[in-house]
Picture 1 (tube, rainbow, N blue to C red):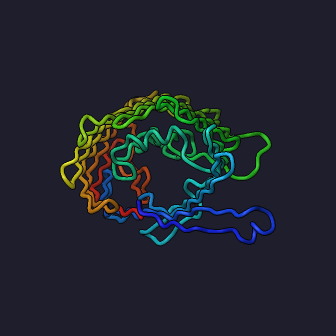
Picture 2: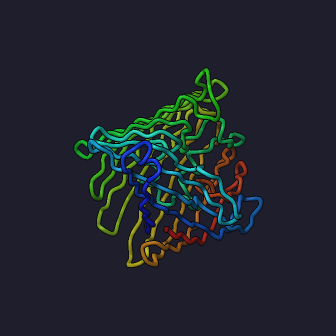
Picture 3: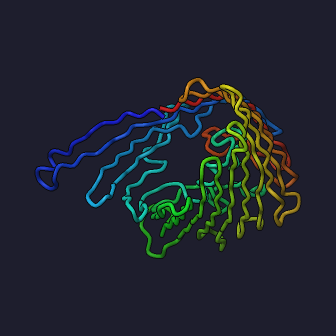
Length: 344
């Protein structure tokens, strides 16, 4: 990703409060848009979608004692409709050193980060979140509890330094909503242990939060990828979610990608198993191909279909996408997507 690095000297502060302080500031972003033909089994349409497009600012400053202060502000940018929301994505401040890293703010949970590592179609048609974020028909509201790929508000996160290629993360928020609290409603925890070396990644995470309607949703997630060769990668993920609307549900699947010159062929297949509601299972298959035009620009095509049983209403166009088509119980959701992604 190309960056613009600026050297800022806080002259006014240095003369009054601090010795000379210099910060490295990085401006970065992503423009990711797609032209989609979406169909939910009853209605269909052609749309342009902005998919997790963003603009961000990062800063870091070296401190005495081998410490480093850092901060980030990142926001969603709607290139398709000319809109955005300031600091709506990962935004935080923190400090790192030999002890590890501590940060405060709003950012992805350790459990969510696993999916980002193994998802072959992240922010595209066929994103795994189509199955991990929704429940049975009538329970597709993200606020009811079956949501395990979100950012915690008011979060405090500690990450250990690497020890033998292992890293442990713990993420806590006393109040995962807006405003002040006196009773810690929506208290949330997420933690993960990960192992990563060149060509191999594996992690396990557990997340729980205080939900609504006497439900305290929790999930155990395992994810991994392995580079069989320098061109061929296989990945997989398993999630077991409990105390969610409709009853406990497992989601699992596999993906693969293969580099062929400037092209990458990719596919994945995931299943949302039946919960306490009869005929509530679904499966999602997606295939696609990327064309790299340099290291910063990618063109791609993807086709995905989610097959819903009679009481299931899972989408194919959700997960990191700003334009989605609602699913209809018992009907298949499908999408053909032509996309462009430019990192800067």
